[in-house]
Image 1 (cartoon, rainbow, N blue to C red):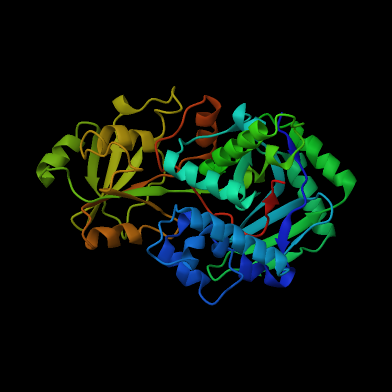
Image 2 (cartoon, helix red, strand yellow):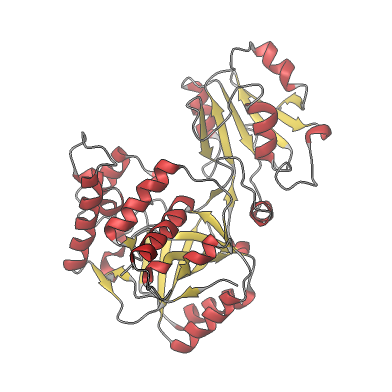
Length: 415
């Protein structure tokens, strides 16, 4: 049973939503964030990547960075850029891009659901990144970026949200330069709030689509506050974190591809010889790049030519949700044993690229000096949830959900 509750969000004034909302902190480096926030004092990057307001010599994990973030958040509030709702509400967040819409319920989820695995993960977290978000949440006393959660298809949830949207105008409606349309509705009717709480309470599992570090950090800060307040009741805001719940049938996972700097000491002939042990290799005779259309097929771009790789039957295991993943097969039968890539998250010889804009970037990377690129068939929602259900995690960089949720449209204060 999933536990959610409404909350009094801090939200941008409607006319400032477009100026405030930004991409999440972890998809931008300092230079990109600095460019986006230039000449825009309302940009939420001043909160989520506050190092852009400090000298470049400052370590991004210095205490002053978190203090600056808190200062910037408080200024947005004191200046009336962010205004808090007077009563607890639920919210609807709808995102439309490339002709497809996904609509989610914005709510506060329980840290206990995460600790008890009602909210399930599919990735490990890195300690340094988790500590960064712990310090950010604790210093700001707030969740500033929503956790992207998924649930299995739920007609009652979808129908209730659509009914509200049909009867009410959005309080926020804008389209970004990249073509992403964002709309927000406020649900402030007590009967509808109660109905949604009941609907979600009948959901057995929620899945972290994006935001593993933020979820773990929110839970850790909540536990820290519990220790500091031994008489806590469980109703305090620090027992909950900001989330958006989307039905899985509205979500899209795009291909998450790989490009590697070298052949790990192999000649091209040696490399092809090793590939042949576990893959059928054939030149791609079609036009353009090779984008796999089914599981067990992989594209490979090497020496300005595309090849189609097909996993041989002896390395395919459909009885094991983990070993049946294409990303697992590529990692364990090619990237690790042949190219020496043991951890795609930390190895500097590999880059992982979302294929939302096609495979041209893979080719560009190879032309610019990388050696070989691989295109994959996207992980499915069923595979994603099956791995989480058995308590396992996927290989690093297995899922790329498109689009990402913007930050700054909802802020949840912990006290």
